[in-house]
Length: 491
Image (cartoon, rainbow, N blue to C red):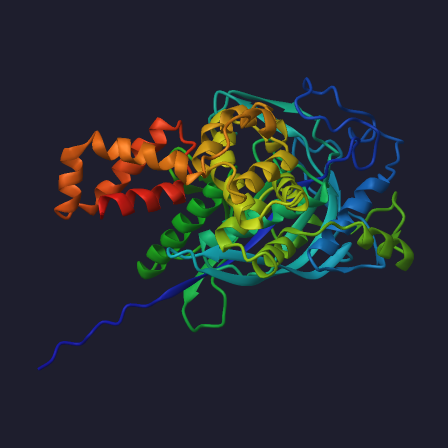
């Protein structure tokens, strides 16, 4: 009699992100108070953002422009007619007891963006993630809990209203994500896009970019979604990935144990590396939305829309494709170069000045990137200009200096020393009549190594080449030196 075989159920995660992005306007969405980060508590406030009686909000025109440009960059349909709504809820950091947001007629809908992931071998896979909607809204204030980082356990709470009224766009994805890795890359692509546009700094540490994750699991093959859980309190892309991976395992374990999944909001505890329950999730009906009576509807003309569309820069995904297809760069190189628009601009300026694209990419993604990371600098803060990098690459490719010489002088170049000065009198020795006696001298000075080489240890050729380079202060032409050493040793 054969024992029954238990088939283990396979599950898949269904993930969507709600991304709040603070717009880089000088003033708030409906008033003239500053949006500057780090001001003393309750100094960037005014009657409008404090919800005092008798005041009227006025839409910041720059907020509308930035929202539309972001929607266009996300391939959304821009609404010709949209409106603001009141989202009712009571919490101490919300002075009016309602938030001005957009509900049924958002400024942008039905978009998408492309994410790109690399496997262990460096092979790329691309996936299109749908964007359900993008809408404008105001931020709430900030509660500071004394004695605990959460309301539970604190002895008292303080509220700072500086953030109240700061302009946000909320970007809601379709449930197209299937892993923590995909979700983290999606959030990073959002940040790249808003930074390229110049509409936000995307700084997660300062709260300029905040992501809430909606996640459920279901058996593979089932169409019906599982019970959705929301996760908050993630302040980095790695935290997004880790929180999702943890929650997937938690839900699968609960389902297999016969425990119900509750629709709730959970917090990510960075120290404990786990999610914990915060509150039962509200539905949209709990907010009692109704049209904002103090703001007129928004009408975007076709002419204005086209003007803003023309102002869009080349976006990260477009650059990645162009660098791979037109310049022949690797997927890794294109990813590093396009991560920051400033780095991409530096790279393109170097090419425009005559640098070979692959060589420029190597210098920027390897030696220069290592220096920037170590010194915690931006590429705009180094003394090596794109034009001078192009000159260095040209000197190497023309055979006037070696790659080793360039790397030796890199600290001087990064400090702003010109290539002309850095390599003065350092031209490669390419005259065979000058190099041959130096090679003969190196071989004659090391008879034991010569004997070992001729006995079969051919790796020692590198030793002799090194001796010649040492004697010439690395000015010996590497290719010619290799040829001469091999010829003399095999004679």
